[in-house]
Length: 194
Image (cartoon, rainbow, N blue to C red):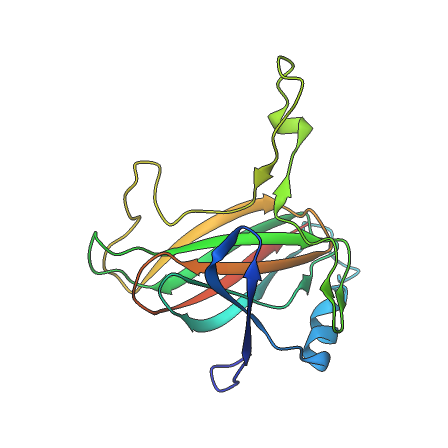
């Protein structure tokens, strides 16, 4: 999608932030069919195959508002490195964007949406504690703040952070949430590896 293309968004409710304004793009049958196609890997790909794709095309997101994009088929890749790239912040009082990735086994159903889409997961390989009988699910989301509650970068040409996760379904959706009160442009690009 180029900057000249216009996408119409429809207001809906996001499960993890029901009190926020959240928008998804209108159904675009040809675009959805294109995004739902399984990636083609070259036969000569002996080393790990990589690809850069767009999960959320650059768009303005109003303050305290979220936007999502169509589901994308990434079947065959094993790791997602999602880059949240937004306009630069000029003050320590400003906030950036939070990114949520959601996965699904199913593709888009016209008039219904995506069945079985979730951003909650639990991985026994990494998170298992034998002392607990019940384990809580994790939420696949970044925050715009660092571990010391600061902003990663003030000034510069943009503000970028990365969410690295395993591929947990053939379909993935990016949802961005503007934590600031000011409207800003943002895009999500992914570096996929096998």
